[in-house]
Every structure is written in structure tokens, then in C-alpha cells.
Length: 348
Length: 166
Image (cartoon, rainbow over all chains, first blue to last red; front, top):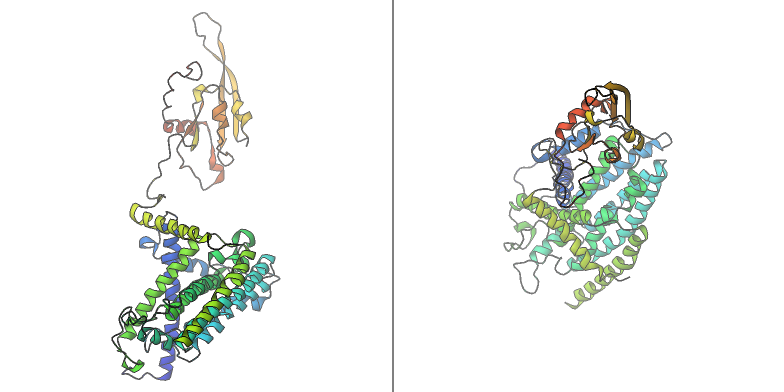
């Protein structure tokens, strides 16, 4: 649809650059706006104020600090695996951003089983975290890694099940098609609102967001890095840029899960309350490729605001409460949600 | 195992953090941007201990009651002229050394309480950090300088016993 043809290497370069922007921009924005500023304001303080106006350069100061720190590997650690673990976590983040649709043509890939792929690659980070804990040769790290494995596997299930409702309703696993279905659809005969699946799948949305919170090990679910018990869990032995990579991966994944949630439940890159009567992908105007990413970004900010708001409000779960909540509350609820969705899908 | 009664509390908690955030936006933070704007401690804040050297008799009560043993006192006896003409010369204790090591002090204030001669006072001054830990040992001249920062003693309550400390 673009007028100019870009050679294949150029497209690849553009995709790589776009991927880096799509991973680092949400991470930086979330860390500065929410982790630094919003958390401080919620605790009635101002947060970083020295580096740049209102501390806006604080992030660069932090990155510089981490980069010039020594990269320490414990003597008895499994060196190669220890060094690789943060990269595995980061790779999972980069693999996730690949399926997010930002506009009618603004996407990295667009394939039929996007949802399935998204759920599959998001669990790669579990592996990275588990081997980070295992290879550190530190009992706190090991316990943190095992807790993380138990938690991430437990909360993977409700996340998958919550998405199944959306997939049933949309009838497709392609994220781009899910976005189109939401914007072209109608609910109760109101076509101006489209049909963002949060209206019909609100239980699925709630379960998905709770599961995302747990997948990101954000605070009510941060048993794996519980600093009062496990020092810093699987990150205990990491310093310098390897810790930075863990840190970036954590917040970049928060942003990308928010992007995926907004694509699945909030109508993705479509302009809210307006669809201009486009019937299929070919009809959509080109300017949506510019507006779409902006809309996705603002929806991401909204959802990650909620994630961070919850993070700064609640104390953490105990390990058994955490597991009980996943297996006894979230999974049954999402199973019932799937059942009801399937029945309604067949009925209407 | 009821999830239902927990939900209002969870929502209320979200409200607390959100309202605090909005309050910080509109009314400013509860904290002070310290190096740029000074914090104003209350008059009776325990910042630093000041010494009025003339009142000190080197009785050692403060040094003995100090839990950290951070007060070092040395003194000697001197003959002072008699109060009345023709009287015998008086013996007074003179301070040679009165040091407080603020690297050890835990600001309990027992020395101020225990001093029977009103030689030790609390001052709210707090800006005396040093790059070298040894410089935190304040000698009697330095402790005397802190006297300027000691606030006026508050008025006694009505009906208070005035026979005690003056």
C-alpha cells in the first residue's frame, strides 16, 4: 500500500529499528512516568528532580550508572548460562512485540496464529528467569527462580483461558483480524461504538490483566523477587548491564502486554467511537498507519497506568495465597467465561 | 475464603493512592527538596547538643550517663577570688576538654536531662555532616558556638514550681 518500494534489507532494517523503538519507548516511558513520578506522587513526594527538568534525564543517568558498573559473575556460578539468562528474558520481550498490530500496515508480522504465538513466546521469559535463579549458585536466587517458575506457570493458564474467550468471539487467532472485527462490529445495534471486546469479555479482560500483573511479577504478585525474604530473588547476583537488561525486559514486557491487551480487548489501533465505514483492510485510509500507533500508545499508557497503579497500592501475596488465587479463582472463572462465550456464540 | 468482602477494601486502597497522587499534583509534596530549600525543624528538635562552658563544673554526670560513652571531659581545680572581701579563695572546677563525638552520639538526650547546672542544651541545627568521620568530634569551642542556635526556653506553665532549674 506504500507508494515507495523498499528493498528487503531496508525493510529488515526498518523492522529492527521499529522493534527497538517499540520495546524501548514503552519501557522508558513507563519507568519515568510511572515508576519514578507516579509512584513518588502516590507517596506524596516528587521523585527524581535533579537530572534534567523534573528529573526527565534520570533514566539516562541510571542507564549510565548501570553500564559503568562491574559485571560480576559469582565464582561458583554456571558462567555461560548465568550470562545468557537476562538475554533470554529480553529475547522473549522482542519476540512478543512482533505480533502487535499498530495500524493497518504498521505491523512487524501478521500471521494467522498470532495469539497462539504470543502466548507461546511469552513463556520463554519463564525459562530465562528459572535458569537465572538456577545458575547463580545462590540459595536466594534459586528459591526466587523456583517461585517464579511456579507462579509464571500458574498464571499462564488463566491468561491463555482469558484469551480463548476473545478468540471464540472473533473466530480468528490473527491479532490484526481481531482488531478489525472489534472496530467493524456492533453491539446492541450501536455501530458507532464498534465492539471492543471489553464490553462482552469484561471477565476475560479482568482475568487477563490480573494474569499479566502476575506474569510481570509486579507487586501484588512479586513473590519471586520478594526483597524482604529473598534479597532480590533470581536477580540477586546480577549487577551492571545484566541487571539493566532484566530491568528493561520487565518494563518493556509490561508495555507490550498492555499493547496486546489493548489489541485484544480495547479495539487496538482503531479510533475510538469512529470507524468511517471501512469494510475490509484494503479500504482503510493510509493515515491510520500514523494515527494507529499513537492510539495504541495512548491505550498502552492507560493500561500500564492501571498495572502500575495496582503495583503501588497493594502489598504482596503470600506464596500459598498466590497459588490458590490462580488455581481456585482465576482458572475456574475463566473456564466459566469460555463456556458462556461459546454458548452465546452458538446461540447468536 | 470469601473474595466478595475483600473487593470494597481493594477499591478503597486504589482510591487512597490515586487521591494522594492528585493531592501531590495540586497541593505539592509533603517532602522538601533539601539542598535547594531548607527544612525548618521544630524548635525542640534534637539536632545538636550545645555547651555553655561557664556553667559546666566537670562533674562528669553527663559522661557517666552517656550510653555510648561519646562525651570526653577533662578538668582541673583552680583557685578563684573569694566572693566577699577577706574570705578564703574558692575552689572551682575548670574545663580543659569537653568533646562530644557525634559519630557515636545517638541523640538520646540523657546528658541534657542529667546536667544539674544547665550547661547542656538541645539545638535544632542539623547541618554539620563532615567528609571525615574524625571531624564529627566537636570540642568545647565548637560546642560553645552551637549555643547561639539554641532557642529561648519556653515559658513555664502557670503554677509551675520555679524553685528548680532557672
